[in-house]
Image (cartoon, rainbow, N blue to C red; front, side, top):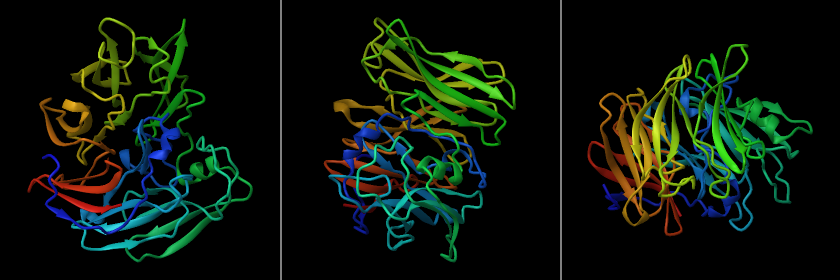
Length: 376
């Protein structure tokens, strides 16, 4: 599909945010406890952290007729986690509106896809925060927004509580923790709890997957091959839930050395059955990105992921999980965020960073067209 833009409209101006490299330590696919809203699959979090930028990942709402995204409002020289406001655009980019003012940290959407719950910092601190998701005490609030009526309701006002407590109230009780080298994720109906850890042994690292069902003790179900600690030391693999008992994740095996994840090794996308610990390779390539930003389409029949193409370009691929056929559907010389699918599967929406330009992109897969919905 390449880079040609058939319809472009400058609707908003998010500020360039590559200074968020300090957030690169976390996985690109993040899940947590569902909380009051039973948030399905990849709708749990809209903000993900990658190796190159702090992504603002848009998604479809209102049956696919509208697109939500976060717009950066702060100082690019001193960005803060709360320097965003929530925006909405129609599918074609002909109409855009602000849904909130500045101060939004993150949000989740309920199963009915018409109500948003927002974590907002009411009075932003003047000093930069390290933001380890986050033990800093800031005055945060929890709001509910009705996407149909635009009515807003205050749900909770914090009292000397950390932003981490705010994420718990939002519905994410356990967050990725780079300091503890672990990622915790829970299945859609909360039957299974998976803990992914990075463990060191004799100067080498290995990724281990532990599963606990109900109140049972956790058990080791999968271990990666060891790799050197000086490359991608903070890397944790993405986890995508297929159902209550199966996940898709990245696995690694070396070819000649244990340097990770350079040319001497190869990544594979594997299906893991938590009930018996069995694994099945569904796709393998030496071009798979360590931050592959995997996501499922709405009916879980295909997986979107990223590879490195010629001249280090970023390629977006689609894997049919039944036939195992894979095809490239888009490429760019820059970086792109996690792609989200519309309900009918006819469109994708994602963020793109290229040549210092940040854009919200919609791909029309049926008409083979690309629209730029917003950008700087």
